[in-house]
Image 1 (spheres, rainbow, N blue to C red):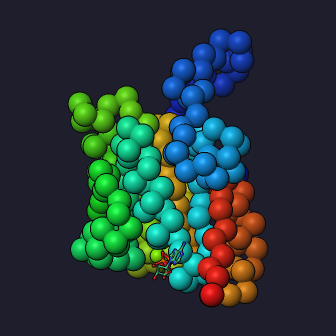
Image 2 (tube, rainbow, N blue to C red; image 1 turned 90 degrees about the vertical axis):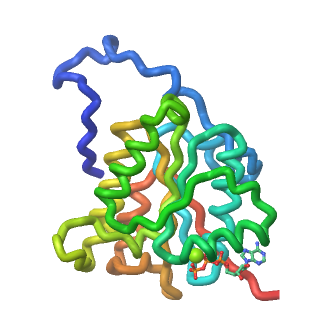
Length: 213
Ligand SMILES: Nc1ncnc2c1ncn2[C@@H]1O[C@H](COP(=O)(O)OP(=O)(O)OP(=O)(O)O)[C@@H](O)[C@H]1O
Ligand SMILES: [Mg+2]
């Protein structure tokens, strides 16, 4: 996978001269045991991009709202950005689920603007230095900003994901990306090899399977 990380190290730096910031070594537990365990035991790795996929109605929004709530309770800065639902709908779902809701919400679909807003929030005195989680519901809704008139094409979701990945690696932030898969198992908006490509661009993921009782 190609990433454009601006980490400030010159080409040819001795590996021994690279000091890893302490914050990058500390895993970020969500408090949802089976999620933390599936992420290697202790939770999210700083700067990792995590994917939640599943067919329409599989429970992606419900699961990720619950996770956002837990991460916010644990003291992280959390933003749940949705292009799928109105913020009133999100509020009603959160109330129904009994969430505390101490996380930020927004409906910005233009990726460059969203990342600027997140950077501004990250740098406020209240949030500075805290782990930062950005939930994106869903990747298919996002405008990567490639076309000035907001048009998207079959490459938009991939470009948007690359932007989230680059941002995460450069700033040690944690995007949690929600994406729909079609009934045939393909990532919506991508070709038949799309799912593999997406998996290669992310650090870990969950596939949600809805069950009818
Ligand atoms: N764990 C669960 N147990 C029972 N019902 C659930 C569970 N998770 C979600 N649901 C219900 O399933 C429905 C779909 O959930 P949700 O909106 O979270 O799915 P989604 O994958 O985000 O759907 P979409 O692809 O349309 O955005 C909702 O009515 C929700 O209340
Ligand atoms: Mg949803």
